[in-house]
Image: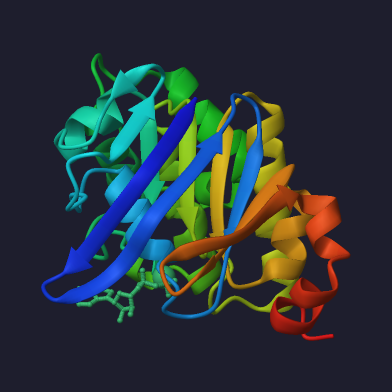
Length: 235
Ligand SMILES: Nc1ncnc2c1ncn2[C@@H]1O[C@H](COP(=O)(O)OP(=O)(O)O)[C@@H](O)[C@H]1O
Ligand SMILES: [Mg+2]
């Protein structure tokens, strides 16, 4: 569904990604794990068109179409939605209005079925539909950010640290919901510092270290890898 080939990205003179290649197949949950500053968010921003690779031989392919250099809203239209780090909901808008915004960059008007799908995964949002997004708890804002992304009916959902700053119980809940969204037919690329849970729900994983993929494999295998356990699972 998605392939990245030899992606280099720099912020001015700072090189953030160096030769990243990875693949997400239809139906998978793929985790991208790595320490703070490894380049995880940069990778996701590059996929969704917010950053451009600096090298000519880089290639990003989504559903057999090359998307490097495409505008972010075009990429959303094609079926790729990005839930950024730190949620970024519109605080002065209601839950309902935030969800409507999610459907904005998609062709065709949102229907009741789109809202129902969001309520199915996030019943709490339905209860708070008129509430201003800025008054939601952190966990609820994360749910809203994910619900808003679902309104665009994505084939691929990319999530940047959905568990960040949430209480442990909520983290478990969010991870269950991510699994449910996947089972319901959406492919997922998941960036996480919580490598434990990420590996638990993923099919495969990549490990990013200072802008390079240093390890990749089945999530189950990485979870038992000695280096990974020491470096990322705190064991
Ligand atoms: N807007 C920016 N300007 C300059 N450097 C940045 C910017 N965003 C990120 N970086 C740098 O790029 C590297 C990768 O950052 P990031 O992708 O945010 O890592 P991660 O998401 O894995 O924590 C870091 O060294 C970071 O300091
Ligand atoms: Mg990040």
